Length: 183
Image (tube, rainbow, N blue to C red):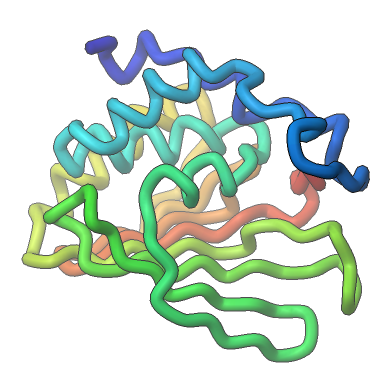
C-alpha cells in the first residue's frame, strides 16, 4: 500500500465532461482513472484515523476536490434533510469502525440546480481520539499554507479549506466558497 504522501489524488480534480448529459444503459462512460481511485479508496478504508484525516485535508489544501469521490467510497446514506438550497446528508460507514457518522452539508448554486458543492463536512468518531495528534497530522497536510490556530480551530489562508475544527469526538471542515469548482 502506498503511503499518504505517495497517493495520486489528481483524479479528484477532473471536471466530468459527461456531467450534464443523459445516457442510456451501456453508453454511460465509467472507469476513468479507476486505478488511482482504487488506491485512494483502499487507503481511506484501511488507514488509521490520523492518516485518513491527513488525506482529506491534503486533498482540499490547494484546490477544491470533488467530494463525491470521498462520499461514494466511505459512506452509506442514512437520511437527508433539505432546506431551500442546502442539503444535509447523514451517512454511516460500514467500512470504518472508528467513524460513527458523516454529515455532508451540500450547497446548491440555485434551487433545482445541477451545480452544488460541499460546504461543510463533519466526521463523528465512535470513541474519543487524541485531538492533538489529529491536529498535528492535519497541520502536516497543510504544510506550506499560512495557518492560524486558536484552540480547536485551524484557519487556513489561500486554500480551498477555510477552517478545520478538531476535538476528541469529531472533525469538522468548512470550504472556502471562493475556491469552489463545480464538478
